[in-house]
Length: 120
Image 1 (spheres, rainbow, N blue to C red):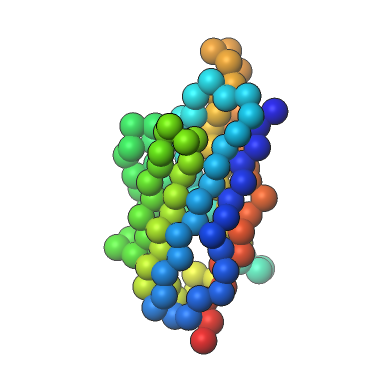
Image 2: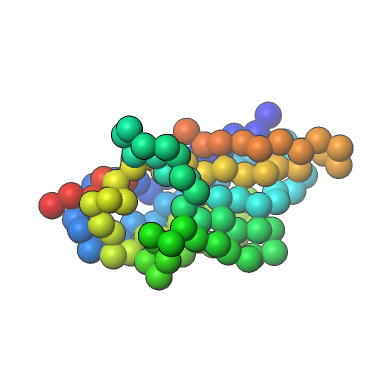
């Protein structure tokens, strides 16, 4: 079994910063693409940032220039550095990873989410 555990969320004032982490553990041969999603109350879940196994990144337009996704493959960890936070960034942030469990078994796994609240 594979588990993803996020951490780093919390309450921050507008303009502040937070760094989210997501660690994958369990039966893992390797990890492919990883991503951070967010879901605000009453809204659809949206992809915020995505990083391939090779380090190529993509961002939703609303966070470009403010958020940075990175990964440490030696630690099976993906990070989301968030700066210049705005109230509209408030949401539950979840990570997703495409895990190669064996050479013939690939599954997508989700973390449980971490709350980010941007408010004065």
